[in-house]
Image (tube, rainbow, N blue to C red; front, side, top):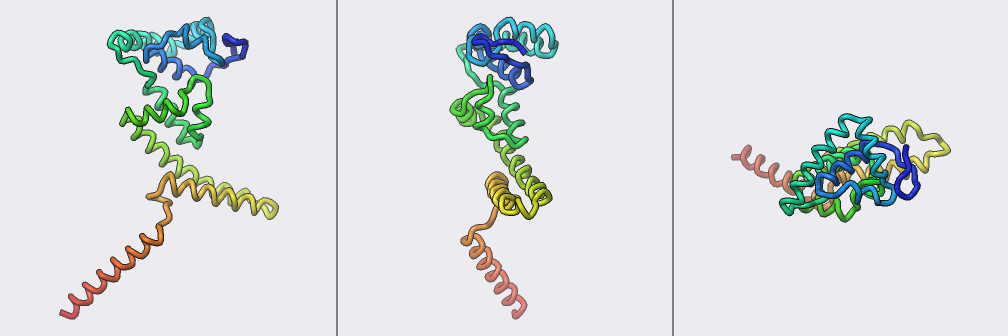
Length: 202
């Protein structure tokens, strides 16, 4: 860990490294990034580059991309590595609000703008949310196994919440049919049965 520009200790993490690389690739300057609260100092980032060869390669690539972005007037905060990191953490069950509070991650508004402007990210994000739904459903079994007579009520509350989340995130697998859907399907089945009966009778 090292002290940031405001005296806070900043630890290396792959997510923070990806966020810095993404911002550099979009055209931001390292000096500007390192002035922000809770970000590592410039000397710390340089030290990480000396210690981590892969991070150093990514940073050199990001600098070249950043120069091209500024030169071509296409400066943007979007970066695929950061978007992929967000999707990966969503699959693990984390909320977008929690992710966006982390150091070096974009704010909620920025992520929502990315979803509107980048179809590839929107598609990956949708898939990540669906996988998160499967995770929520799997967690129901854990709640049932860990429940005791004392915690039964709390477990039931959690299970209900997990079922609701799974149904919303992965409706194809866990969604509950509405009354209208049930009635429509019953009517369709009745019509089909009537047609079959008429064919048999003819």
